Length: 545
Image (cartoon, rainbow, N blue to C red; front, side, top):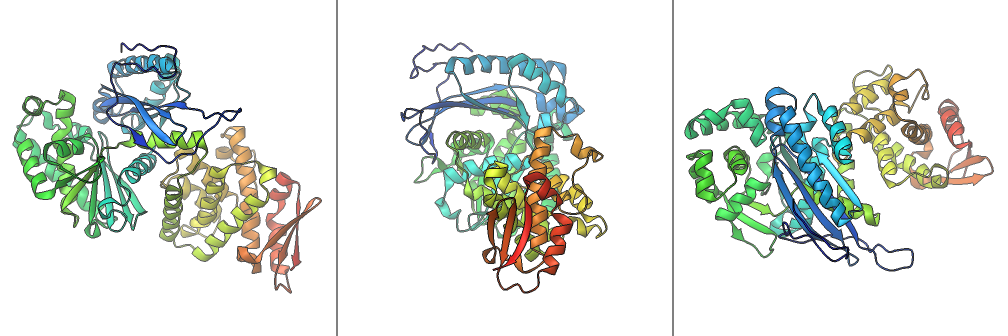
């Protein structure tokens, strides 16, 4: 990468110019002296067939201005999906790319960097070795994200680009992102995230699993269709594909279709592709070898190699819906990463995606048939206590969200057995996917829920002591609130609006209106208030309001 930059803030390297700018609703950040501050950020995506980087500025007026976009082909997915581990040559090539990117990051004086890896690294048995080598060679902390995180980032970018265009916020909409290792499906109902799922239908994975690269084009397409159809049929059992009216296609191969046969819309960021025209395009492409696609469409070999498997996935999914066209936005998961970086700069949260987290947790609670009224009461009381005691625990809004999720899910273990159900809750939560939460956050929620009853955290609890001290402290603070909320929710205090809290010295007094007999609540507090008193140094006293 041969880029030159002066020391001036406004100077930019000229190696590869960004072809678009994206705006995001972000607040103005300021310096200590009140002057607006422009922050330079970078998003790096280590994918199955390429490593991509986007450099951008978060501007004072609330915009994200993309400075540069870079992409270099790699073969991490071919190794991982075929052999279950990353090959030495592929790792060396990836490290060389990341070293080059690191040099550009220095030239731009980037202040915030988010580097993520997806399915190829996630599924490799030697992923830890690769992550260590990346850190030693570049200083980059490469984060392996779960499919639920990929979905969250993609949905964030799509919602920003599409908004209410073409009825997406009114209809049942399906967002489909076909990557190299997996296909991410997210269903929106009236603009809200209803459910999400990941299918093992990545374009590179399909080639490696079915060994189609050596087959004649028509035979290859036949094998792909059959395999994809089987996977999609399974997905129909858990996804309401038949009710979908808007089909949003994300990914480079969808953008190829948009370039070839797309129709412009009122938005410069959106193109529509008619279903009938798309079928014809898929049939034409399926007749060609990779080499022929390169020549005919001017594609790189890497792009042409994955084109037919990806187009077939889009086609077969589109046919399962009621949509008569594909909506193709010019966004990717990296745009979601940029939005997240911008929110980190400004301290804002994406309220829509937070609602998606709660919806996902509620759906899980319903799946395990818990008492939702009690779960919601405990969750509401927990965050009420969180807000009341903010000065004592000093935790942030993300921890507040995790506490609410733990409150909703604390009794899911009862689905397995009422005996020691807190331990079953830990296992079920720790081994589930919750939309919008990363694996570390899910483990945190599992521990908080595990300690809602019976024993408090102990040195003999191996999963707990294996965590870093900072994480254990957070678990103690939040589990103490959950235990107290669960105790209060057993009686008349279950409705948050009826409860009044007051600090008096070393006591926290809960005033409960209309209570003539608080024996039930007092016994529950006596049984579960130990951790709260240890962590916060406060005794809980109940009084009639």
